[in-house]
Length: 580
Image (cartoon, rainbow, N blue to C red; front, side, top):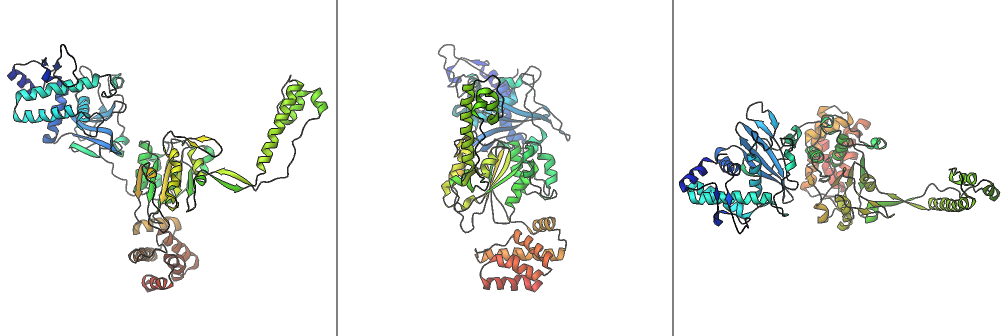
């Protein structure tokens, strides 16, 4: 194959060949003592020169997707002839994923070819490994390669033939030896991904639209395909069910736990973000923070409904302890009069041991001896007596909703965990939050969270009684979403859907009053009450019942906004009475 034109020209000028036996042209990984050599590899150098030119020509892009300060994917949009290779590389399994997209309005896509004669020289795949070698956050970052890469670029610009050739030899030798090494730090490359003459892993449309492979750190150029998906603003539950339902299985016995919110409810940005993460990544732990009435619980129920999963909820309080997170004690309301198990007569045991045993066991064991039947009768009588005694306890131990939810695919909402007085209490669940970890229950059973149990913590952070979280809990959350207050338009849409109230003029007044009262409470730092969406809905429902908007405001809104009688009077006179 032909080398890049400049390299061919430098070889001719220096009267050198593609192979060098000089030690200074070899990389530090070339440890041979006899016959040491380095070779120029056309596809590797073509990839390096293409990366050099991306910025100047404004075509193509290179970057990474960072997750918790480590690289999840290397991302590349690499131009080849009249097509764009859209690719990612996962260093953990050594696999590429990608498609070829034509540079025309239709943008037709095809599978990535394998590295074969007449198909691909491997240039685009080598470009990805070059990228992995020069990114400091990368597992495969190599300081020698990075230095030679930068020095080659400088030497080519300056027209320094000898230096450019030396750096070219070193780059090719370095990358080749790291790819073919047998040590643990060798570049991971799965050869089987090209077994069928083409790259096995391709992008589906939702992969590109979801932004799941989108880089969050761009190194060269601007990404045009691997971008972040734009939200479907105004999408309802029914629309998103068509896109996200069917990814998880729900037991028939659990279907009654699937929420049944109105299908025309508009879904928030937070819900869509979590749905994308759940469907396209292993992420299952989330947190929503915000004031009461911003829709955190509604969002959690929406997620369960859209995914078709049962919904469980556990509410924390100041006194919640480690035991309550796993189980609770409840009174035994089913106490019955003790009855002894029915035992066969001794004569019956002698005459027909199998029939006598069947009286207690329910199973006829033909041919059983008298001695064996008698031994089994004693054991069964003991077991039945033990079970009867256990059922007669004054209290029963019942596993919590958290444990029930962790046994199967579900959506679990843990409400107000910040209310727990001891921040360390919640760390009892860390082993349930960690993938593959096992938690010991009180009865000795070991439980591992189902991989499709979705945990959503919903909490207020600024209310009276709220405390800080233990950092180990926070670090396990995939997303922590601060919920913004509902806008006036969102409030109106939601209250109309839930109450059926259709007087636009009256509704505008109520929504405006709620917003103004909420702002006043914030401004005056009044923390002994609340005023938000729930108070609006209660106001509307109370008015529908008693037909008196002023009285409805007094009992449903003002009385909850503050406990101070003077402040209540001020709120009524300022925000309600002038408009009634």
